[in-house]
Length: 336
Image 1 (cartoon, rainbow, N blue to C red):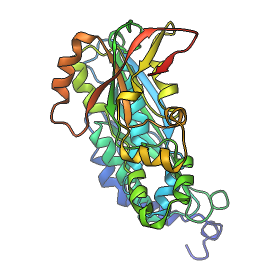
Image 2 (image 1 turned 90 degrees about the vertical axis):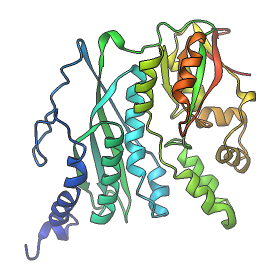
Image 3 (image 1 turned 30 degrees about the vertical axis):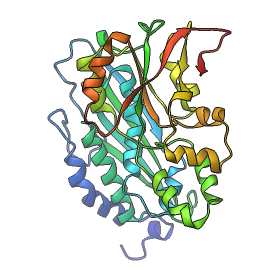
């Protein structure tokens, strides 16, 4: 269209159509036999699996915060989509659910087709790795609301669990073990502080720590699936915003508490650097970051050998990081 008034206002419909053509392949690569619609409809249709006797749907939504700003500033967008998917599916699996499908929302000031394709391909690849369909999404060009090349991401995930197999923490008991499963880094939390610390870092070391900070969020669904087939998991916590302090207590009954053996584990180097360069106390670290533990599971002591067998030869490790105790003085987590 010559003299396109909408394009003059800042919205390029042709660019949007071009993007759709470029991302069709990666998106359709996530599809399975439960998908009932093709791309391009007003809504996506998904047939529920027939092998679950008491199907219960589980839903969650999340974003990646200001990690997008760090990724954009360093032209490193190829894994930010994995962060988005990870933030959602890692929440969803805490109740024992399996991801079914995912929807993404990508909003930007001016649509850069190449940039958007890289991000959405990353989302699709992470969905595929998590056995999750990328069923649809929205790309919004919002001139005047976002400026320059700024963009934001949000995701929404739906999963399913048999009602009789929901993991809700109700069976957690005194003396149970708290297992910490390694994170791949800070995942997608604490980045406003991380960016501030990076701003004061010397150029000689800055790039190394930027690369550490941009490590993508680990995707735990397949691991948790395997663990569920081998051991009785009583509760799961995804260590995100609020760090260890806020998230571990969410996964255990209110009359119990978590004793965390913080003095016995060594912080990964990236978190050591954050603490030193940011002049942060142990309490700061425990309240803001995952401190190298991306997920916790609570199990009975007699399950530890079975868990260790599942974790053999994996790229991440699991450690006993604490135990369940009776609550004292209305405090639900202790660091020793």
